[in-house]
Length: 341
Image (tube, rainbow, N blue to C red; front, side, top):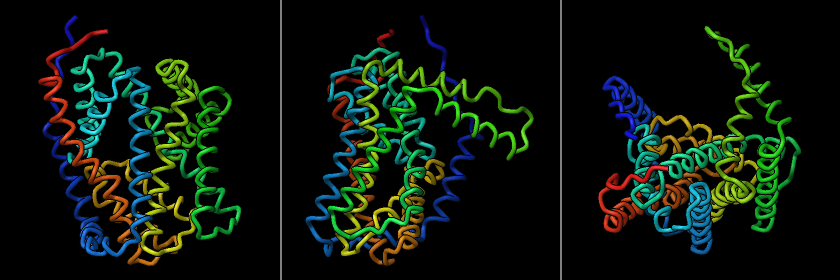
C-alpha cells in the first residue's frame, strides 16, 4: 500500500519559526554569551564533581536510549542509539527541530530494519512519556519547599532527595498507568481550567475520556514493560537533575537541592516552547537566573550552567553527527528500505 505524499511545509510557517527563533536568540543572547564566555573557568572546577556531572548525564542518556529501545520493541542497541543521537542533534540545531528530529529517528529506525509501526508507535510512546515526566516535575518540587525542609550541602542528603524524588515520580507514573481515577480527576481539572480561563469558540469536552484513551494506547505500545518504562523515565530525569547538582558542587557552591529542583523544573517547562533550537540561549538565560534566585552566587550559576550544558547539549549534539555517519555506513541511504507492518 502506497503511503500518502508528504505535504511540503508552508513557507509562511517556516518564516514564522525562523522569526520566533530570531526573537528568542535576541532575548537570550546576552545570557548565552555570558555563559559561553565563562569557559576558562571550567579548568577551576573540582574535577571529581565535574566527572560525577558528566557520568550522571551519561546515565540519563542511557535511560533515554533504553526507553526508546523498549518502546520500539527492539534488541538492536546500535540502531536505537545512533537514531536517538542523530535525532537529538537535529532537534538541537534546527528551529522547531522536534518534528524534524523525530522524522530523522523514524527514517533511521526503518532503515535499520524495523517496521513502520514499530518506529512510529515507539517514537510516539517515548514522546508522551518524556513529556509527562517533565510536566510532573513541578508537582514534586513544590511540596518540598512548602514543607520547609532544611537541606544540608552534602552529597548524601542530595542523593537522598534524589531517591525520594525518583520514587515519587515512578509511583505517580504507575498510578497513572494502572488506574483511571487520578487521570479522570486531572482531565476534569484541566478541562475546567481551559473552559473558564480562555474564551474559546468550542468548549473542551470529554477530556478525561480522551486522556484515558491516550493512556491506553501508551500501555498497549509498551505491553508488559510499562513498569520498566516508568523507571527509565524517572531515571532519565533524576540523573539529569543530579548532573546539575554535581555541576553546582564542582564550582564550590553549596546548593539547596529542593530549590535547585524547582529551578530545574521551571526551566524544563519553559523550554517546552521551541523558540530556539534545543532551547539554546533560553536554557542558559532561564537556568542561570533561577539558580541565582535559588541562592547560588551569580558567577557559580553561570559556570555550572555551562558545565551542565556541555554534558546535556553540546556533547550529544556532536555525537549525533558522528552517529548519523556511522548509521549511513551500516544501513545505507535512509529511506531505501521501508518494511511495512
